[in-house]
Amino acid sequence: MANEAEARRWNDDRWATAWPKRERLTETVSPFLLRHVAARPGQRVCDIGCGGGGLTIELANAVSPGGAALGVDLSAPLLDLARRRAAEAGSQAAFVELDVQIGTLDLDPYDVVVSQFGVMFFDEPTNAFRRIRRLLVDGGRLVFACWQGVERNPWHVGTALRPLVPPPPTPPPGKSPVGPFAFGDEEYVGELLEGAGFVGVSCTPYETSARAPASALFDRTLLPLMGIGPEQEAEALTLVERHLQRFAVGEGDAVGEGEYEYPLAFFVFAAVNP
Image (cartoon, rainbow, N blue to C red; front, side):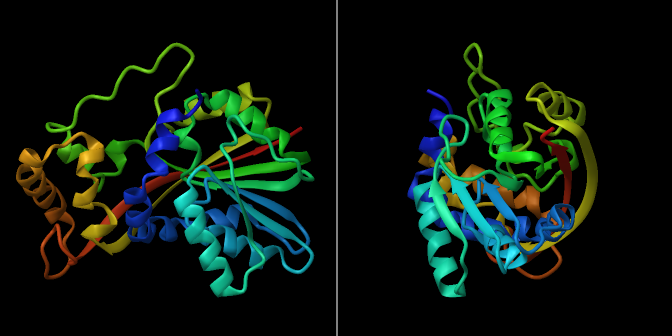
């Protein structure tokens, strides 16, 4: 089954509860991505892996009047959050639960498909990008943000917790590794896009920083999902505190709500459906 592990993970209520805290990082990247998207009134835009819907709502504002913005995600809990936010904002953004790697949308094609840190979780990425290309009009664009390699993003607490976390299983035949840094190699991603039939592939690297509490990166309730048992929790908290202290810019415990400045390195890819 395609994306079975990711579907299970993102439909766990613990991830959905923790997600809004993590948006402090993605919100920092949104302006960079939106400049590349350059959405205009009247356009149809699809946001893949929309999560809590913040970017989809911004896109809906950009294509109004006359346009449409659809957010797509495989996480039912995050889509519930996205719909609540859209209703509160009076937004016309719409949302659909779907894994685009295996599902289809019976809707008119889109002028632009966008993703903000969503495409790195496809375990069959070439197939997924082929399906995304079918969502686009001829000449339509795919624009997405993905993290550069983990070595360029020292904020990631997975580095500190590596001694306690079981190694990831080897992907079965026909599958690819997934995760936040799976697209950290510019050449690899370009080959995936071209293999899926896209042309005019471009990649723009960016570096910036985000100021946020430690909870934007770490939530102890997620430790069991990472394979860390209760007997290891104290050690895990110590490792995370030591890891994050280098980013502290104010008073506070690294596993509490003090302020930290995190350096972020990411790519914005763009490609065209011929």
